[in-house]
Amino acid sequence: MAKATTTPPDEMSFLDHLEELRWHLIRSTLAIVIIGSVAFLMREFIFDTILFGPKKMDFPTYQFFCKVATLLGIDSGFCADKLPFTIQSRLMAGQFSAHIWTSIWAGFIVGFPYVIYEMWKFISPGLHANERKYSKGFIFSASLLFFSGALFGYYVVAPLSINFLGTYQVSAEVTNEFDLASYVSTVRTSVIACGLIFELPIIVYFLTKVGLVTPEILRKYRKISLVVVLILAAVITPPDIASQVVVALPILVLYQISIYISKRVLKSQAKKEAKLAADRAKKS
Image 1 (cartoon, helix red, strand yellow):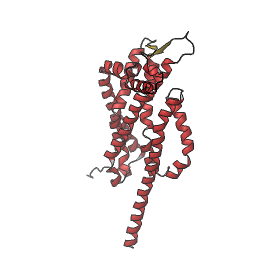
Image 2 (image 1 turned 120 degrees about the horizontal axis):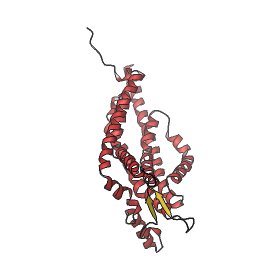
Image 3 (image 1 turned 90 degrees about the vertical axis):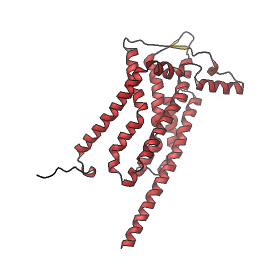
Image 4 (image 1 turned 180 degrees about the vertical axis):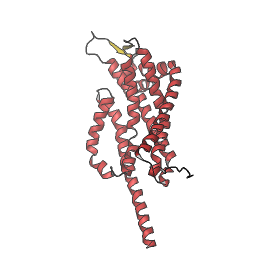
């Protein structure tokens, strides 16, 4: 009887790859659900401390801007006693739905390193051995960038958005009473959007590896990228210039870092090609 043989990763069929991807997605989803279940049980901490933190004027961001305004001798809304709005739920299942979805998103944020790990396990068989050895560095770098972006979104973008939109009034006749889902969406979008935007250097690294991006292309479209960054900043921040600049600056810094990374990748590839050419010349 012939012995069963396993198919090498580079000889797997399209359906085999889909099956492999399915199991990676299942494991990632299970991780998110498990972490989300823990977050579900930590309701008071997740909502009262984390989500409603930027609603309170003792939030670190407001304290910082208040101190800056005081040092400059100017009046600032960041020094107010409380934000002039209330949060309410207008739907029967509004609070329960917010609890469920917030727990799931918390599972995704906290479980992001494991999700990245599963993604890496899926793509790593198609990489060279010397590239696979950088897996730990990739997972660490991607996780560090995501959490840095998430913290930036939570401590900068979210409070600036909430402070601006919560104090904005078209008339004294109108009071701000925000729906719970709208408030949660503002915080969630700020955190996750910034977390994903901060992955720009990783994305550029892989696009450079496959030949879709070069430093010259990044430099050529720098001005267009600046416009895109400002538009993106306008989307995820309140419509005031100061907030947009605060968000745009780190993205522009990441863009410059991405140009440097793309340059290093091409240099590394050129050295490898030169070495291979030299080895062939010696053999011949």
